[in-house]
Image (cartoon, rainbow, N blue to C red; front, side, top):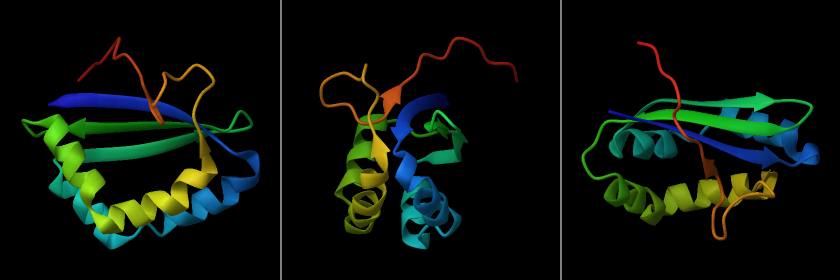
Length: 109
């Protein structure tokens, strides 16, 4: 199992919209997440800084292939099209990054 942590900014004027979207996440998108071997997926929000932190566990054997499968899914693309305007990459994000991966420095089972 691989643990993944990522961070991104959230536009201040989109906080309520983002919360509402995720309170009613689309079943097709949730099914695709599971089909791509992701479990224990959680998104945390830190206000007033408006930082989103996501955590999930990847249980598959080919992360890149599963992420490509998810990215190719039309319903997931539609979901991203409504969520992405709410988000903003960190100023320190690498070129082409949206969510910025974080280093796993400690874990206790």
